[in-house]
Length: 177
Image (cartoon, rainbow, N blue to C red; front, side, top):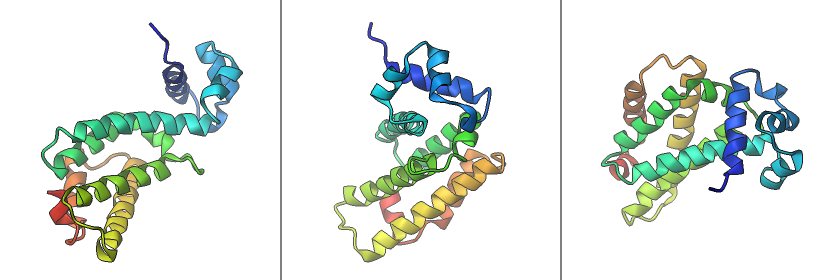
C-alpha cells in the first residue's frame, strides 16, 4: 500500500499544532515528527503555509463532495459550521495564520465558488447585481465565521446557518434554495 506522504505531513502538522503555536513549528520539526527528510517535504510543499492550505483544501473538497448529496443550502452550510465546530482546536489556530495562502483567503475563494456555482447551476448568467450580491454574501459569511471562531463558537452551528440565511441578499436567495 502506497503511503500518502502529504497526509503524513498533514497529520504531523495537526499533532504539532496541539502542542505549540504555528509560528514555533518549523519544517525541521515536521520532518522530525514524521520521520521524513526536508527534501521530501519540499518535494510536496512550498512551505508550512502551503501545507496548511493543502490540509484545508482536502477537508473542503470532502465537504464539497458531500454538498452534491444535500437538498438545500441550509444543509450544506450546516455541514460546514458543524465541521468547523467539531474541529475547533485546529481552526481556532489556523484562522489566525496570515499570509497569501491563509485559511481565510482559501475559505473566501471556496465560499465565492459555492455561491457562483449555485447561480450558474440555474442557468442564470451572473450580472453586476448578482456579482455584487455574491461578493457581499461571501465577505459577510467569512467575516461572521471568523468572528464565531475567534469568539469561542458561542452560537450553535444551526444558529449560524439561520443568521446566514437571514442576512443573505434577496437577489441571491432564489439560487440557494
